[in-house]
Length: 270
Ligand code: IPD
Ligand code: CA
Ligand code: CA
Image (cartoon, rainbow, N blue to C red; front, side):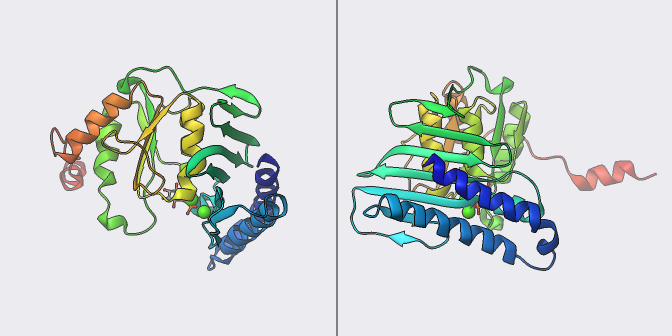
């Protein structure tokens, strides 16, 4: 898996270095080419070594033969960043055995960071054991989130962003859910949440967080499910506090209204 992820990462970097700034203007083709070429390469390598395995890839791959093994492939997580030349993106690969996540690999080619996990064997960053942070309080935490690319107007995440910003050291929104999960696993973030992610965004990262000693649930504390539209990951220690915040926000309790920009504008008038 690592060899495949590394090869796909190198392909993405070639596109990123050579074309991204020029071709982004007026065209999203480059992204499509990079996404598709990466998925094609990954699929070819999987088929070569594991011809009987099922595969689900974001760019359309659906091999469903009823195999015990199933791969989830995000050939480029962080497409918007990639298209703008912002170097935060990765390749994400996961394997399930009879519906149970057994292996995950996420490769960040911009930093040459390889995040891996095997069920029951812990998580590793470039071969070194990796653990979540030991921070025990939300007030001392750095957390992260993401916003959906589609139907943004229907998503309430801005309220969660605001509340959690007030209750933590800050909320980052870097644009790659797979790397956000790796950053929880590596102890750089204490928590991460997002609405409406897809299986290829989360399959590898969730296992990596769990194997690094963290916890992943839905927004009510129920078990994370691959088809779930709610991902809440943490170092485990602040999970209870995060769940309590989510409950309060969903119930509309203690919501601090964001300051009014209109009132602000009046004050700044000469
Ligand atoms: C996206 C990224 C982003 C998240 C979006 C995803 P893509 O994946 O993970 O961080 O906020 O919800 O769709 O489209 O770049 O593979
Ligand atoms: Ca993705
Ligand atoms: Ca993608």
